[in-house]
Amino acid sequence: MNKKGERMTHTTRLNGKLTLVAGGAGFIGSHLCAALLAKGDHVVCLDNLQTARPSNLRELESHPNFEFVEADITGPLPASVADRAHRFGRVYNLACAASPPQYQADPEHTMLTCVVGTSHLLRLAEQAGARFLLTSTSEVYGDPEMHPQQEGYRGFVNCTGPRACYDEGKRAAEALTFDYGRMGRAEVRVARIFNTYGPHMNPDDGRVVSNLVCQALSGDPITIYGDGSQTRSFCYVSDMVAGLMALMESGGDGLQPVNLGNPNEMTVNELLGHVLALTGSTAAVEHRPLPIDDPRRRRPDIDRAKALLDWEPRVPLAEGLAATCAWFAEELGGAGGQPMV
Ligand code: UDP
Image (cartoon, rainbow, N blue to C red; front, side, top):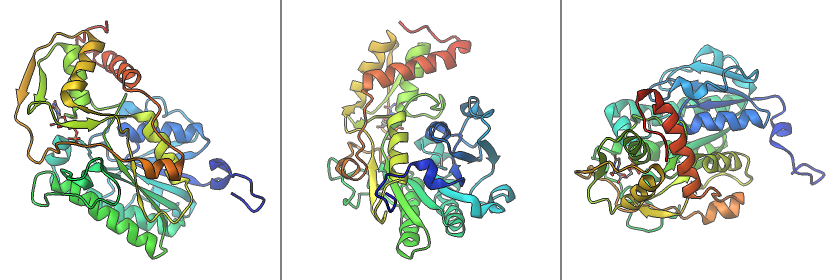
């Protein structure tokens, strides 16, 4: 609110400043860039293209207020960003591989991206006087003993296991971010993102939604890890982006993390049922061992987000999954994908 008690819009508040989206070519990042551009922001998208696909930016490239910079946040920020530090008003950090097989492929880089990369972006925000938003993760709760997971729960993380590079990296990134906030070095916001799905997921990233949908569409055996009774709660990407933007623009001191996700919990087997019904696939199911430290249950408690942001997910699974299947069907079309029923 301004002095007259009027609600200020995102655009007026930014007053010609730039918005940096690190990880902006990724799955969620590319949708965030599009939504920010639609609101009138001038977006600088920074990405190392390690797991992101340049095609995610196809529709944004020609936008006059969009810039792409290829760089890795574990190194010094490139001159095209650092030299304009004072111009940034908002810094979103979505940069990190987020799918277990991908973040485990180079665990040292994952850890450095979380910690060193976040440090570089926080320093930029401090220099710029910009507000900084870290995308943390439900993985900070590990294999949770508390269900559903509230932000106050401190988690049950195995710091020596194969998921630790991501889980502990994000926990350290949170610690660093809150230190900047507490010390007045930058205004900060921290989102803990739960499982999210939608168009622009990487077909090869090994996640359950992308794997099951791609396998169903192509007729390949459907891989279920363990007996499929483990649960997740899936949030459609447009809901996630709305939550991230609302959190960035929210009031308060920002010194508390906020869960963002859809509390609609289901087993992996139930998810498979939805995918099979949507695609009409009769592909065989192939059971594989449950990955080490795979959480048994996961569901966000989103009371804080509801109260603070007046936000909650709107897109039902049937709708989101249909849009996701249609998008993958088109992506795989050239590779012999089956048409949707
Ligand atoms: N999963 C599965 N088949 C797959 C990929 C994943 O059964 O082809 C399981 C995985 O073991 C986990 C759940 O689906 O229990 C969600 O996995 P994902 O990698 O999507 O996300 P995360 O484990 O990070 O929640």
